[in-house]
Image (cartoon, rainbow, N blue to C red):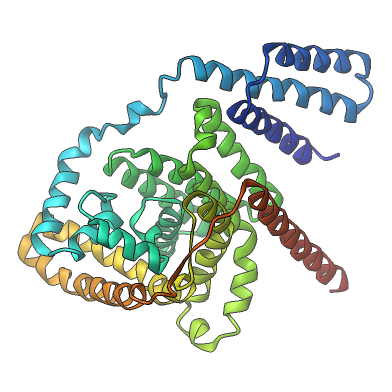
Length: 390
């Protein structure tokens, strides 16, 4: 039993405790029993490593339950202090004004949502269109959004002449400045932690270490605020990042067989998008009861332009804030990207077959993730066989 596996068991034990206490009322007697059994097994079988690890897992499981029970009594919301926009509130307000002065709805509301997380002015009609087209994720500061931004920043760092390791630190610094800028929205914080974990995983370059890193990030957030376990935003950020780590190589190999995607270097971005969506699809259907049939097509058409839209959008914001005439020039490519995006959404959202009302129970939710886990296990098994044959 390696130290990496032991660490993973400890992390999963804490998550298991939070899970049990989040969905069930766990008597205090059970918590005391877990602590007593853990200490008892540790003392009696201290020479047997496997039993000691199991005993410590029992203690950590009890700690997870206890932490959640305490938070139920008085959850002050440790992260709520971060909701304040702080010193950058005036700058964010200026960016908001610049967007709404230079663009008309729905371009302005969609751009504001994509760049600064301001979704207030997206109309209900457009929310429905985005849902039907399967691209609502582009207007949310979510795991997907942060991943795209982090990869843009990583590419920018490499373009500026930084080594890959330095570029990762550069991306992390700018990423958290951006999260600070938009006012430390809770969804942005969660996505930022997962995005940071993903960048760190890329630096490590090992899937086992990547899994431990992601679960550690989740454990830290749950230790601060256990109620996050039932939060759909937390679930989506974690699952999207997990999907990107494990399924991106599979989709990348698949997309690189298409010449046009390989020629324009779109395979990586689309692979991350589909990997994240596959992993979040069951939880989305379970919570919202709909399935976008147009989503795979619209994502292929829209996701490749997102880095260019976000890059040109930030350039427009900075120049328009400093010198409006120059900002107007840089607004032209942004206007073109937005109009293309709106054209695609309008076209696909009008078809009756574009989305399907589809509800699944918690049983089928578990079954879906069981098969996803089995599929990943098979992929890893094939990779090991390839290495052995090589």
